[in-house]
Amino acid sequence: MLAFTFPGQGSLRPGMGRVWLEHPSWELVRDASDVVGRDIGHLLCDAAAPDLAETRNAQLATFTLSLVVLDAVERLGVEPSLCAGHSLGEYTALAASGAIGFEEGLRLVAERGEAMQDVADDRPGKMAALLGVSDDDAEVACQRAESEVWVANYNAPGQVVVAGTEDGVDAAIGVARSMGMRKAVTLAVRGPFHTPLMVPARQRLRKALAEVTFDSPGVPVVANVDARPHADPADWPGLLSTQLCSPVRWRHTLVNLYEESHDLVMVELGGGGVLTGLARRTLPGVRVASVASPSDLDAFLQSLAEGAELASQGGGEHLYVSERIVVSPTTGTFEPEQRFASLPPGSSIPSGDGLPLAVGDPVGKVGEMDVRSAFAGRLVGLLAHSGERVVDGQPVAWLRSSDPSA
Image (cartoon, rainbow, N blue to C red):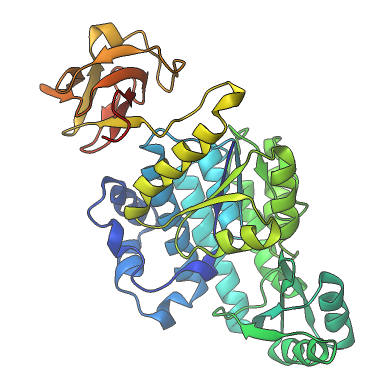
């Protein structure tokens, strides 16, 4: 059972997008730039750290990069059972689930970033991670600070983020130190996010949300505000506007995801690996994976195959170490060979069954070019349907190799 998780703007670093420039999924960056009228490719590849610290820039770049990674993973035929996102990442989770469209998501994120930037410009704030402190002690530190400071993120056991005015955050840090806090780290953001100081941004965001049609998500999405899954599309405008002024309950989200299935793999899609670390800290022993670059894709598939093989005594649909992928040699419309046409996309045949393939056998065509298997084995599923447009290197079928060492 896969839970796709998506990071917030604090995960972004200069140049993170460069590794994706030659990947087919990079086309989403060009499309996104056209939608919002901004050069998101420049933000992902060439923008300096001070530029990326601007909320209006960081949010658009982070959202788009996570969608690029999501698209690359979907091209492998991998889909989630659950989704969740940290702060801004909640918008990516909703896009991944189908609750909002690509263009609607981009416009919402652009408006959210502008609204939050305006608040930060009018009244600068600060956020800091308190390490080695309990949730209760972080709350007490904010109360004893006697200033405008609140808990903004419940990230993991022993890691709580506070936000507010600069004086308020500094005061809370001082109180937390007197209570035994180990360390405080100032975050590279310039606003008091997820606090009551964001009320002006919330009012502006509400207007943008009112113009968006939310659909029922294809898979459950767990909300930051209450750490619960919401399937009713009518819930999301209120949840997203409330999120701006309320703490992100990420630790509670991770626990609730795990309670959905103890056979869960938490997969972080996007730059940084921050959420992977929080998952390990919150749920010791949970299986995690992180995809931040194209080089992570093969390792991700292998980790899924290895984990599924360990669980294969249980039955059901599984992946195996011996699985191999057949990819398209070009861009065009895919048509499977007649003998494979009865296999629906994503189907799986039990181990030992499947339709035999020799090295070089055709699986289908993309345009006029044959799609041939580089392995011998048995074809057990299609990853593209008849008439689907595919791109060079996109997986279109999977098989179980007769030689697992191949």
